[in-house]
Picture 1 (cartoon, rainbow, N blue to C red):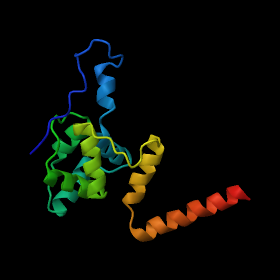
Picture 2 (picture 1 turned 135 degrees about the horizontal axis):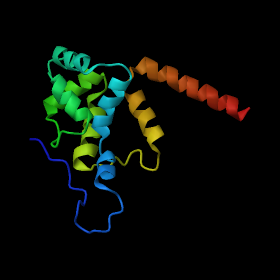
Picture 3 (picture 1 turned 90 degrees about the horizontal axis):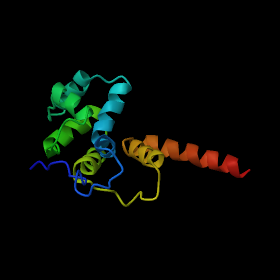
Picture 4 (picture 1 turned 90 degrees about the vertical axis):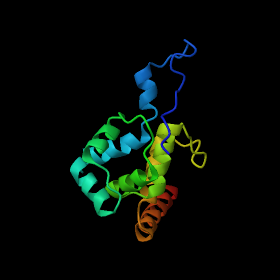
Length: 148
């Protein structure tokens, strides 16, 4: 079952200082992942091809609409699987981004950290264990250098 994007108080109090477009930008986590991948050189067609190869086809037009935050309802679980395959990210990262965008869900595990930390954690979550271990060693080495 697909859930609609939450109504974040549009027009209900009259004293919300944020314009509607700014509120929408605050809840485009899944859309942003797709835009970022496209910005880094991955075409929408390549994303669609990856999703199809994984057995969870997501069309190029749907990905383009999702990238512009023009999809009003949360993607189905199968579409989330396809998007994860398209972006080569863990399904949990895609599910969390969709939950934030469409259900106004806020993760508590990383509360208190800024967007940079959350992006780094999401990036590391998509790596295989050997890559994460390598990054951990680099961070620990940098920390030791700072202490000297």
